[in-house]
Image 1 (spheres, rainbow, N blue to C red):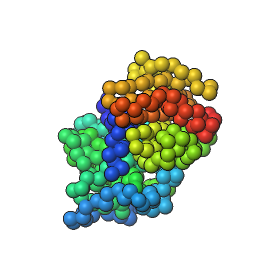
Image 2 (cartoon, rainbow, N blue to C red; image 1 turned 180 degrees about the vertical axis):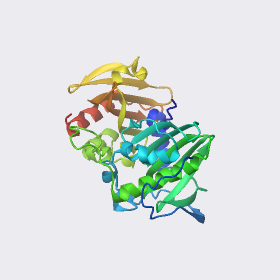
Image 3 (cartoon, one colour; image 1 turned 60 degrees about the vertical axis):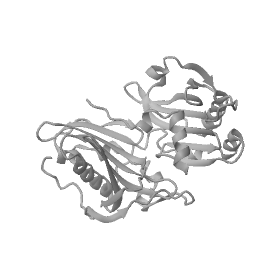
Length: 333
């Protein structure tokens, strides 16, 4: 089994927050869905980069973040959809908006597919675009892995539907075909998450749930807001920044990352606190919001970061303030 995780999701740390500062400047094909937007190459067209002064906006109403949060990514990775590529295994959640399937192609070769909804898309200056399912799409490759990124939101924050395919065959072709099917399903008949999941974080926007007044107090002035994916957000002013992330992950008490963490109790929750000073001063607190199955659950992570040497800031006290302000805003599990 090969689990390919996005580095942004698995190592969201002080280094990732500092990177956010820089950002501010096959088998037989089944008839799975009516394809209304064929794939076409757009000659010599370069992808539009983020526009810092333009509010984020969906390219179509169907792809607004609040609608994508309601979509079940694993139902988009069902057996009829994946059978066009070979023999599917069981699809499983690997993050709140990510689903993975580690299957075989028609010849028995390993084929690993991860579908990510609402993931941050970094656009290089030279990125050329195609149209997949009618959406502007860019691709990138790394050895046998292809990332097919179909843009669903433009403006200051660019996010999209991303197919990550690891395959010794034509991994980009698999990614394009998957995205085309997924895009058309979301437009016409999106499979929704269970409506009886009390207290779930899947419906919460971390960028809007946190009190603006508290954000200003934490960094000593009005911060800039940087959405990143549908479940991660960073606030930054000068050398100070803090972030909030919701994820589907191992229970923090069982995570190997927390073996040396300090256990803290904050307003009724048991948090796992880790302070780092290797790159800059950073404090991370995470806790289990809602248990799911198999030792996993919906996990909240708060990070506070000071990237200026010589300026003393109690980053863990600041992170604790973030937790205290956030907790009353979250749904009760």
